[in-house]
Image (tube, rainbow, N blue to C red):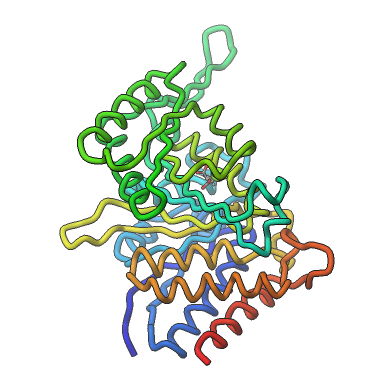
Amino acid sequence: MNQVGNLLLLPGDGIGPEVMGEVRKVVGWLGDRQGLKFECEEDLAGGCALDAHGVPMTEDTVKLAKDADAVVFGAVGVAKHDANPFHLKPEQGLLRLRKELDLFANLRPAMVFPALAEASTLKTELVEGLDILILRELTGGVYFGEPRGIETLADGTERGVDTQVYTTPEIERLASVGFELARKRRNHVTSVEKANVMHTGVLWRRTVTALHKKGYEDVELAHMYADNCAMQLIRRPKQFDVIVTDNLFGDLLSDAAAMLTGSLGMLPSASLGAPDAIGKRKALYEPVHGSAPDIAGEGKANPLAMLLSFAMMLRYSFDLGAEADRLEKAIATVLDKGIRTADIMQDGKTLVSTEAMGKAVVAELDRSLS
Ligand code: IPM
Ligand code: MG
């Protein structure tokens, strides 16, 4: 048995535990059938951590995450904590982890599986064969900029402040990841900001342009305003290869891109830190969908975004590209066979539960060995 690495599983809230259950099946399969053993620890994050410990992420959990080879994250968010002060919202658990592990590069690939082209809300010909990658900055910008807060003014009204802030090194380190990734794809980067109205946008465009000149001139570079990008994603999504953008724009654009693929339940993500002395990056893998409290506990959740995130982990954290391909192919085959969770259900297909979907994927993994 080959000991591959240590994982920290953080299922979180809502449908998080359900989709994580299907990850466990694949972990079990890799150990039993491929001799690839992952040591898994599990802990609380988000609303369930608030309930148990009074904070959305404990020091101990942060430490476990720092010590793990990779963190596999479900989802956070529960309505009953919505009114909490900011630092006690479930989402803060995730934001803290991103910041403390310095996971600045968030890869959100949006790929349309052939079987799902018709499930998109856009015309099939617009999305068929779509394969784009949104690279979102994840530890800066308006999510973390200071000052931030709500203050009461002398006249009793209130004033809310968030600060959008970026430095040259923050933009450079993200953009260089974008250029490197583009080289392994179709060699095209679209850098997205609002240089027409924001100073951070002006600096972003200038910095990306300079970096491009310095070492990436072989990659094609285009600049686009974020509002136009939102429109172009819906108008002609296949024009894009790699989109490099800031934290907030990346949050919005990746939800839009997700719908091109048929469902938010299909979009995986990887959040990576800088390589250390031996080239290893801190990493967290999570589906782009949230905790979906409306369907939590009903076995309706689509586990595929979670499983595709796990495939990204195999590829990026453990260099197990062949196993990642195998898992992605198993998922494609399951979809080809017409097996569907509710979010991607179409006429004439077979509606299954979260667990049955995971089981079908594992059955395909088995078949891939025979
Ligand atoms: C995402 C989510 C998070 C974000 C929330 C849960 C804090 O929407 O990962 O896209 O805004 O970054
Ligand atoms: Mg989001």
